[in-house]
Image (cartoon, rainbow, N blue to C red):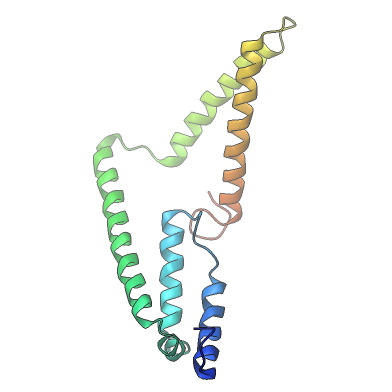
Length: 160
């Protein structure tokens, strides 16, 4: 519609494009963030301020379909979370407690590996393992830093 012969449609499409561009790409977002972003986009395009532009640019049916599918996905995601929580039952462990336990185990593994790596006798298997583990840890730390930077706990305060 940005290439329409009608100046009114081009102007409406340009205003709608600004709204759409504000939300950037949802690719790479986690499910909750993606669902929330799509919800906000739909609400903006349906708002009093942009509804006429969306209609003039021919976006209204697409906005309605996007909202319908996003709501269906959100319901499915919520069901999955409820099923997962129910399956965990009384054995469910708080995330922070699980993280603390994993951190302790990881620290012990790291100490053990470092003791082998610090040995004066070269060991290609240990060196290869350390190199591979460093790649995994670096990737995890990058993801965790990105998660905390974005306010990963949904409250915008930098995570847990």
